[in-house]
Length: 169
Image 1: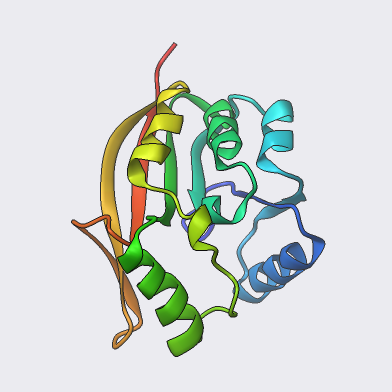
Image 2: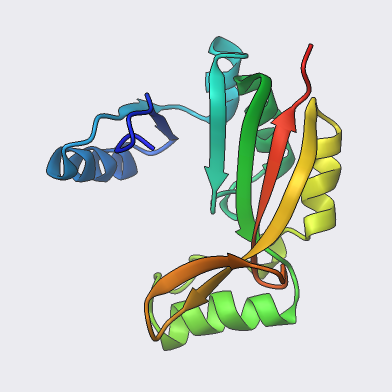
């Protein structure tokens, strides 16, 4: 998004991940403001300031994903867009995200994922429904290991993405 001219703020609780992100931004020549704080802390200071909020592939790694969804809703302006992506909780998702990605293909370190923290689409939509956000579209996010590419397509049985908009005041 920054490469396309958007003003982008990146959040992370950890110092080390932010240092890596800053290095990537420096190497690529893009400008991103990086902030070390939780999304809940950021939402308390910056409510209603963003046109677009993305929460990609992190809900399954936090202690309280419902709180993160609520904070994302607080960050966006009325009429703004919020995008979530995460991993469904079922046997196929465990096989692909844990066994496949961690143990067979070694795409991420072993222990990165805990299947108990994976989120069923109905759970995510339920949390969204508790906020000012309205579901627009849900779709699958599919990885092809032969071409090392991702595509959006029907089927939310493993990775999926949810597009929401904030209700206008």
